[in-house]
Image 1: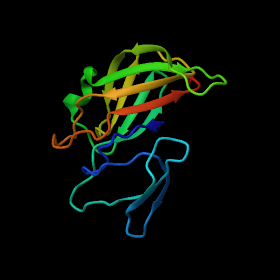
Image 2 (image 1 turned 135 degrees about the vertical axis):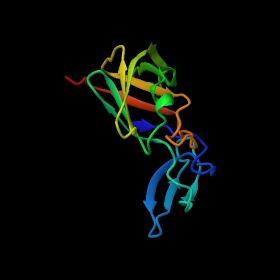
Image 3 (image 1 turned 30 degrees about the vertical axis):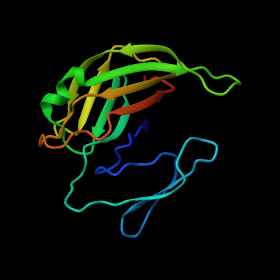
Length: 169
């Protein structure tokens, strides 16, 4: 699984791009080493610190393949009404053509409908049933207006990608 982070970062601090090294400091803060060598990015070191009292942000903790779709686990319980709403889950699938030249456009882009949603008892895991799964494709999920169970926190990152190499049996 590969989560794609937006520039919002954590608690309004913009995260720079080009992160290639991560290290936790003794005080729990996270240092990110950035480089722009050979790729678009920033150069330097950025420090992210936890703000006491700010609580755990609502975000995707994990995305796992199931025989019929994906399980999404969140950092905290999600609001039942927004979690069960099928319109909050937009999947596309595609692949990249591998060849000698650098880069490829997204090939054979297809919308993948979500046919069912189930919510775990602790409201931290959402099980999504998809219309069809195919191997050797990237599944890109854009999440809609999901909220924390208390209704106060909105989802930090709405885009997550999963490279499906082999189907489960």
